[in-house]
Length: 194
Image (cartoon, rainbow, N blue to C red; front, side, top):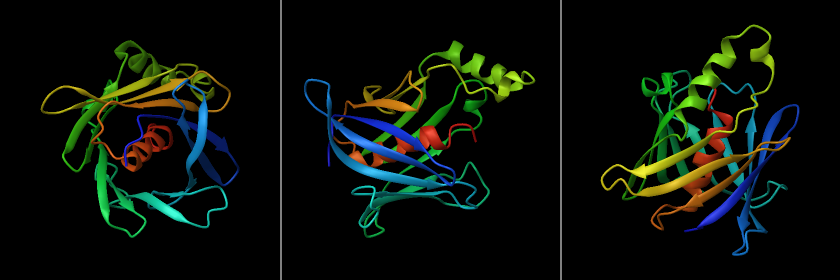
């Protein structure tokens, strides 16, 4: 299931983060809704389920943490029947200065990092300054995922400046399943600070 470009909009509610994944038309405008996701806050074992729409009647895929507390254990992406279709994992050692992830689906194995190393360092310093660290981040950060073997671009996730979080996603490699790309995009928003 290949989708070359889509966007993600976040809706913030009291008990959950909600995400709309929207197709991008050839002219760059928003197309139809591809999936709707919801992440419950304060869950012991992180799980996000994606549905066909916001009525949440038909789940189509999800991702779930492998372990309850071990943040380095990774997340499995599964289809509607619970069959694995991919996985991702934050690389905590590399992420101390510049956030880094591993992403794998089928024959696609990638690493992803924050595009701008300066913004990465400034974001970390921002969190340590008393009182200022409580103010939402004014920095726009982007991630690029490349194939570990060829170095070719696979996935780009660009955060756009807006009141609510909004991202533009480009899938460069047609081998990358939309569901895995969508799961990684939601994870970048929902899990990045953990």
